[in-house]
Image (cartoon, rainbow, N blue to C red; front, side, top):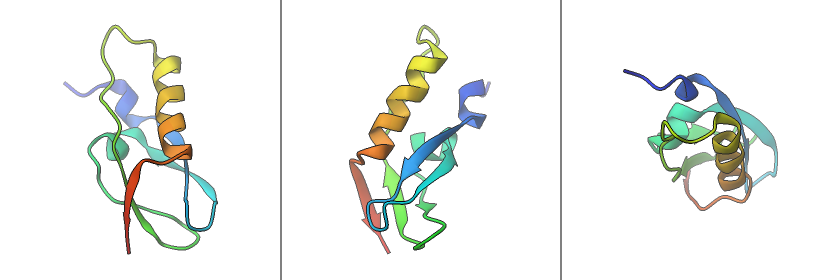
Length: 76
């Protein structure tokens, strides 16, 4: 069964052009490439999965912290 949090979107910041855009959490969790809509840089983020006992708002904040100050692998 799919976690409902996976369909939500979180803010992501591109380290190249510093633009902020939104991406589905499902793509961030599974390290699928996310392209910046401005500069087209391919980003991959490393975000842990949402646990059932964790508050949704807290998890969204956690994801946005990880993607605004990215610990990422960027490849063009």
